[in-house]
Amino acid sequence: MGIYADLKFIVINGNYEVAPGIELIPAPGYSPGSQAVIINTEKGKAVITGFCCLPDNFNPPESIKAYSPVIVPGMHTDPIAAFESAIRIKGLADILICQHDPSFAKVKSIP
Image (tube, rainbow, N blue to C red; front, side, top):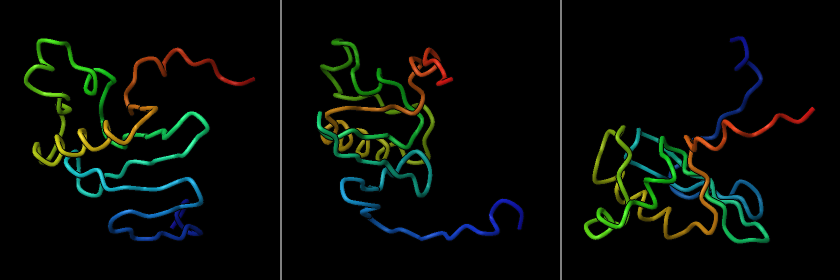
């Protein structure tokens, strides 16, 4: 089995508390089984989106915001579920951590 030999998987359906202050929530639309992670911090709820997106998906330009509060990520298996997930996550997050945020490329590694 290689690297998976000693791992124990838990199949999760719905919300799941991993530990106090850390929760998994369904984030359907991008791909089957997509989940977001909510972490309660001193500065509020940090949400790791769990799907391919950029900060721009949650903060569209004013010209688009007049029609839609989010831009659905370009990659998805169900556009309606992807829209609903983006709306839900935007509403939950005080701190939004997008999977493909280009600013992550600027992070220096820890020596």
